[in-house]
Image (cartoon, rainbow, N blue to C red; front, side, top):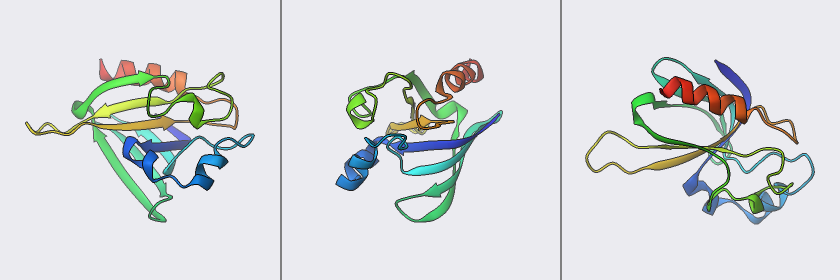
Length: 136
């Protein structure tokens, strides 16, 4: 499964957003807060992103191994809240993927995903259901 027009941002990236970026996310039809824009794919072993990193201005690719995913959540939280977007979260919500390495001293990371965003709606409900099936 591949979904284009995906916007991703790590929890740590919210603190690095400029004030201009924060204002942009409140403009009509503007994309959600993001660092990466591209496509996501789910295969047997990993959740994969391929696309552009707005912070480093380069193409990137990264994988999150299936066994490293600790939690899925579809909705807003204290980091990616409705204030971060236009519309107060009435028509779409992000997916949070909480993951960490399998090391004893692992550090958990939160990745927020908004897929198939068209300015008003997203395909996150369908992606969330697919991710739940994939992880089960």
